[in-house]
Image (cartoon, rainbow, N blue to C red; front, side):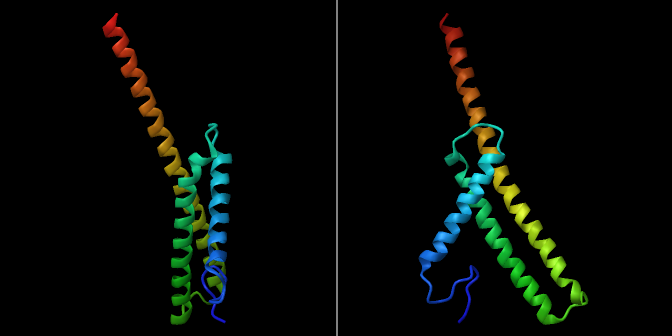
Length: 130
């Protein structure tokens, strides 16, 4: 039985993979929603959660390919490949989470700038009409 990157075999339904990815997106979105000090809608963080999960899956797959290549080629590291791989995976995970949160923060900042511009434009119009 050949395993897929998300742990299922070829006879498993694609719905199983979809459920796993949906659970990851929900978890990442909830993490970002809880970590944000501003009270925004949970749905506002979904895009950042999607970006985090996509980056995390891509980074984990790339790390898996790199570690596989490193072990096939025979490395000088020998027995310490496992701790190094774990540290790199934690780095990839934290980087994906931070980039998703940064995307959400940029969206919030842009939204607030637009809101201020609209309020400033409305104030300027009121001053001109007086």
